[in-house]
Length: 194
Ligand code: DC
Image (cartoon, rainbow, N blue to C red):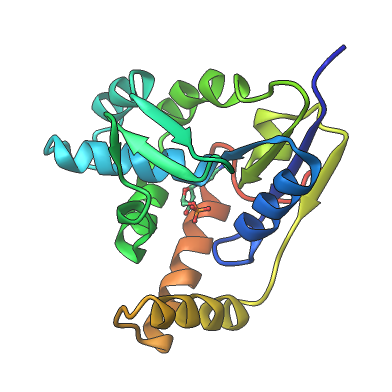
């Protein structure tokens, strides 16, 4: 019998990460934060001095990433054994992730890795293409959306709570730019599944 998968896709800051984590906890299922994989890929590339537009080099890197999700709710992210959970959450890390995620080769390199998260008793998968490309067989597919303004305010509050500097207008502009890139790319663009 195949493992049940529930997908939650949507744009940056819509709250899908929070909902996915709570659902996985409630159901006792595994969690896949696919955005974290793109964030980590970008971080690994930057650490090695690889240009974010060098699709071949980044795909090679993505295929051999030493990444693990640990902790009780699988939200602590390690790259090469180092905890990078906080580092990958910055706005710059999200922007860099969106750039590497637009390369078809990079997406292909991460595909099997993501599918291997479908383990018993079930998986909650959060991202942009979970219901459309990675787990098209999922029985439950959620598309979680909100206006750029509402998502920007949410991000702004989160950054403030962490004591980080934030500018609301800038955040909303960045969100719009990222939406545009994630929705317009040729491969696995952000869109609701059928
Ligand atoms: O969900 P997030 O903000 O952590 O995602 C960061 C970037 O990664 C996002 O701008 C686009 C990319 N991404 C993707 O292309 N496909 C996914 N399934 C998840 C994220």
